Image (cartoon, rainbow, N blue to C red):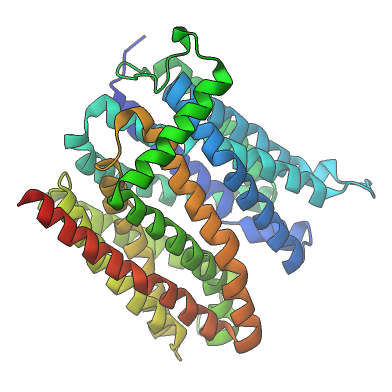
Amino acid sequence: MKKLQAKQVYITMEFMVSFISATMFTTYMVYMMITLGFNPLQLLLIGMVLELTVLVFEGITGVVADIYGRRRSVIIGMFVLGVGFVIEGCALWLGEGNVLFGAFGWVLISQLFFGIGWTFTSGADTAWIVDEVGEEHIGTLFLQTKRIGLIGTLLGIGFSVGLSTLGSNLPYLIGGLLYLVLGVFLILFMKETKFVRAVGTEQGISHFKGMKDTWLSGAEEIRRHPILLMILIVAVLSGAASEGYDRLWQAHLIDGVGFPGLLDLSPAAWFGIIAVIATLLSLVVIAITEKRINMNHEKVAIRGMIVLMGFKIAAILLLAYAESFAVALVAVLLIGIIQTMYEPFYNTWINLNIHSKSRATVLSMLSQADALGQTGGGPVVGWVGKRYGLRASLVTAAALLLPLLAVFSRASKRDKETNM
C-alpha cells in the first residue's frame, strides 16, 4: 500500500469534508422545510441543540486529542459524524407513523451526533497537521487546502442538486456514508509521527486526572498569554455576528430585496447560482493570494485580518441597506469571498501562538467560545430582527464585528513590540 505524506492526507481530508458539506447543506432547506415540514421554531431548536452540544463537548474532546492522539480523535469524529448524518437522512423514514417520536425527534438526535463528532475533529485535525509539517509551513498549506476545498464545494453543489431531485433526504444519507468511508481512509493512511502527550498516563496519572490537568493547562495558557485572550474575544464576537448573518441573509434577499423576475427562477435556484459564483470568485482570489502573499508570518496574517474584517463590515452594511438585487448580490458575493479568505489568515494566526502539547485543547476552547457567541448572540440579533426588521439585524451583526478591528490593531502593535 502506497504511503501518503501527512500533507497529502490533510488535503484529501479537507477536500472530502468540503465536498460532503456542500452535498448535504446546499439543499438543506428543501429537506427540512418542504419534505419534513419543519417550522421556523423547529429549525431554531435544531440549531440550538447543535450549538449546545458543541459548547458542552468541545473542551472534553480537545483534551482527549491532546492526551490520546489527534489522529485517534479525528477518526472517531468522522465515524460519529457519519452515523449522525445517516440518522438525519433516515429521519424521513424513521419518523413515519410514529406519533410520539417523529422525524423531528430523530433530527434532534442526529444533531447530538453532529455536535459530538464535530468536536472530535475540530482542533484535532489542525493540531495534527501543524505538528506534522511544522509551523513555518502552515500558512501556505492552509491557503492551498482552502483552494482545493473550494473545488470540492463546487462539485458538492452539483452532486447535492442531482441527489435532491431523486430524494430530498439522499444528500444527508449519502453524505453520512461518505463520512464513514473517509474514516476508513484515515485509518489506512493517516499517520501520527510527532505527537507528544500533554500528560503522560504512563507516569501513573489516572485518565480522568490527566484530562483534568490537560484542560487546566490549556486554560492557564490562554490566561497567561494576552494574545490568546485576544483570540478568545475574537471567537466570541465572530460567533455572535456570524450566527446573525448566516441565518438571515437569505431571508433578507427573499423578503427585503426580492429576486428579479426576468429569468423566472426559484429562490433555491438563485441561492445555488450565488453559491457557485461566490465559490468560483473565491478560487480566483485564493490562487492569486497563494502566489503573492507569504502566509507563514504572523504580521501578514494580522494585517490580512484587519483588511478583510473592515471590508466584511462594510459589505454587511451594504447588504443591509441595499434596495436593488444587483447591489445585494455584490454585497453577498463580497462577503462570501471575504469569509473564504479570512479562514486561512485566522487559522495561521491562532496556530502560531499555541504550544504544541496543548494545541488541540486550546483550539477546542476557542471553538467553544465561538459556539458561546453563536448561542448568546444569535437570539439577540434575532430579537432585533423581530422588533425592528431584518435590516436592523444585519446592522447589529456588523456592529458586533467592529470591536474586532481594535483587537486586531492591538495584536499588530504587540507583534511589532515583540519583534523590536
